[in-house]
Length: 364
Ligand SMILES: *Cc1c(COP(=O)(O)O)cnc(C)c1O
Image (cartoon, rainbow, N blue to C red; front, side, top):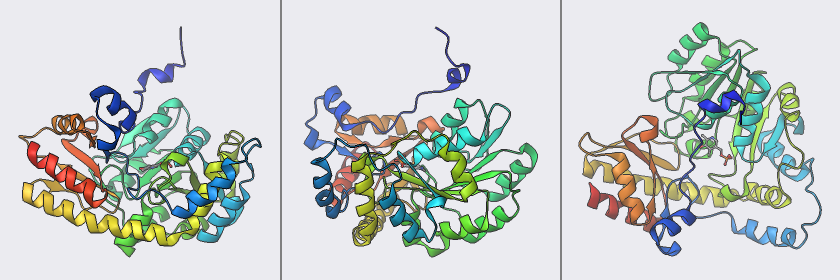
């Protein structure tokens, strides 16, 4: 059978290995498995969410509120924007899909960092767009600007902080960059880890309101999957000028967010104390990874997120390390697929990190 020809160049995205699969493949007891592979919040989510969703579970016959009033109220209050500036997706992943389908086609190009979130490339391939990458490992805005001028991409992705490297763009430098981009080029600022960056260094904190009000061609993306601990609920959002949101809405399937997810995200958004506690623990534990890297004489990239990227020495192999840990029930991310001899490890609870240090030390 013949399929859409664009699919031929797509390699199916491999998300972090699910615990369920490790249980089946290696016969390891689920309670002995530690997953530090998908940047989930090791503390889970706000206990208030768990309380609130109980009422929802008792009544699931009705379709969700497709206007998403409660969550939009929460987001517009948080960011000082209107409902017309917001689109909510099944994860911010879905918003990425909408915006690429809305803006790019076979005659356009997208510009991304050399190493970045894999989904930009996959969705771009859906529509047959050309993919242009910078050379530097970390975001280099001069390089972005040179390629913008020569290649005239229709979309530029700035992932800050970046996944899977953890580096972040200076907020002032980003604005200087945006000032030079014409209004027909869509710039996506993916802030999936922005809550962490803001805590770690105010200079890296990008303010969505300012972006949206100042630039009619910028969309800011946020998610409930990371700091808010709701990866399983699949809720993310895009914030942009009304004219952009209107176009994205044309691609949104009705009821794309479940009642349960809408309630969970609305309540999670209110519990700032929980998020702050999670982030504080994250950076406290991240110091231990820096010490570990020092001890083992391996490189660690300065991270503004809830994960660390460890570059191994030439005599060690990231794939072998990841496999070795997996067999012992520790799931991390091998970055060999990105052309790096490196691993990405989500910062876990103190006990989870202890286990990582012990197993990794053995291997190294
Ligand atoms: C996790 C992540 C997302 C999206 O996550 P969703 O679960 O789909 O909301 C988007 N961008 C980056 C860089 C991420 O790491």
